[in-house]
Image 1 (tube, helix red, strand yellow):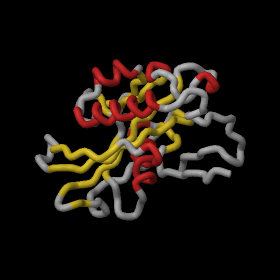
Image 2 (tube, rainbow, N blue to C red):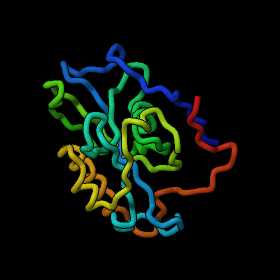
Image 3 (cartoon, rainbow, N blue to C red):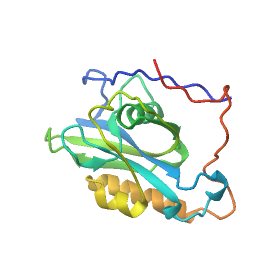
Length: 193
C-alpha cells in the first residue's frame, strides 16, 4: 500500500527553513515525465526517449520555461522537497525516482547574484491537477525531448534532462520501467488540504 501524500494548497514562502551548503542555497527539482501513449505497457525499459513527454513550467516573473524546482527545507528529505515543489509549481503528483538521481549542479541565480546547489530527479507523473498553488502565476507545457531541450531556459536543467535521456537509453529492453498500474482507493495519491 502506498502512503497517501497530502500537500497544502498554499506554497511555502520565506527562507527561514532553507538549507545552505557553504553559503550556497540548496534547491531541488524534478523532470516530470509521462508516456505519450495511454497504453502504459508500451513504455518499457529501453524505449526511446521520444516515447516520453516532459512537463515544463513558466517562471513566475516571465515566460521563460523550466522544470519545477525550489528550496530544499530543513524539515524535509530531498524526495519530499522535490514532490512538494513539483506539486506547488506544476500541479502534478507522481513518484520521485530516488534511485535514478540525476545529479547536483552549481549555478548562479541571476536575480539574486548568489550561487545555488541544484539537485535533480525524474518524477513519473501519476496525476495532473486542475487546481494547484501557483496555477495563477505559471503556465504548463507538455513537450517531447527535443522541444524540452530547446525551450528550457536553464543550461543546468538541460544537462539534467540529458542525464535522464542517457539513463533511459541504457536500460535493457523488456523490463518495465514506469511501473504503471491502476490506482485503487487504497493506493491513490492525494494532494489537497
